[in-house]
Image 1: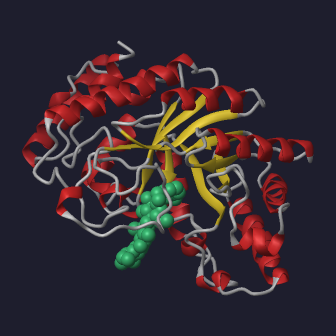
Image 2: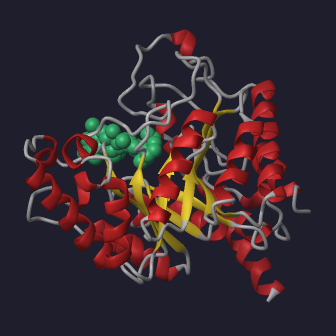
Length: 372
Ligand code: G3I
């Protein structure tokens, strides 16, 4: 077996160096990969875009099955794309990520059934509660029902809380009332009995928002409805990671008997126009060159901050490995990251473990070294 692996790596490294893309030359042939290094702890996943799901990007096509054992669709299972019109569903790409998961024996996490953002236009313009409730019910039944037993889990509800922990003033709250989150999980458990069901959000390591999540989970549990886990998105900055608060949330969520996951991990290295962390795509800021300082490459000092940040996070994840079931990066490599376009368009960010040539970065080595 080792011989076959060795020759496999040898072939890959020859191809990749010539093609100037993923070079495993930095990963010597005996090196463990992310998924193997952490297989006794938690799943390691990545968010895939449409081209990567269809293996149209040769670099990602080689790297993703090698390094990861879980995938999340970055956009193609969102309502705007999978349910564009009232009675029209578009399952083409969603079926493809299911097939991709089967082909590489990876766990697929569906993202996401109920979210205030990326809603189809026919929903955004809905005025009456009955129409929205009909949409809400048929969307969950149809989409979660179709992939029951085919995907491992769903982010049933995404980002339903304001920063103060109260329910977000979304169309769902306005039209369906405070019970809509419990209702979403009730419908999903019926439509997808073989699928794990999660609540997913950002900044829920912050005390007020953590309290909001705890109240939501208890409400769902007290209603006798299934919730299997809480996803902490993990959109942080390499130079300012709230480690203490993150640990407090891991412990608090796990104490309610649900799994904890880090579902959209990335560590931005660029200055942020606002002091606070956030991941609301509707928040935007003007371009200004001072906010885009690393166009020519990441200086060693910030590369080191990124490595230290990921090392500290993975040390914490390993400390709580029996509470954490998955760590998913929000993208495969720096070039793909949404953080190149948010909150300021046209920037050059470096938030992930693989660079724009799909080469492992020092942060990758720092994470792998924890398991040596
Ligand atoms: O597909 C269209 C394309 O046809 C069009 O030419 C192009 C230009 O406007 O837009 C493309 O759609 C973009 C889509 O990504 C696919 O690339 C949307 O404009 C863009 O807004 C969308 O951004 C996604 C964002 O969610 C939208 O909400 C990001 O890729 C995705 O990484 C991001 O992910 C969210 C999670 O779902 C939830 N948590 C926060 C996270 C980051 O915002």
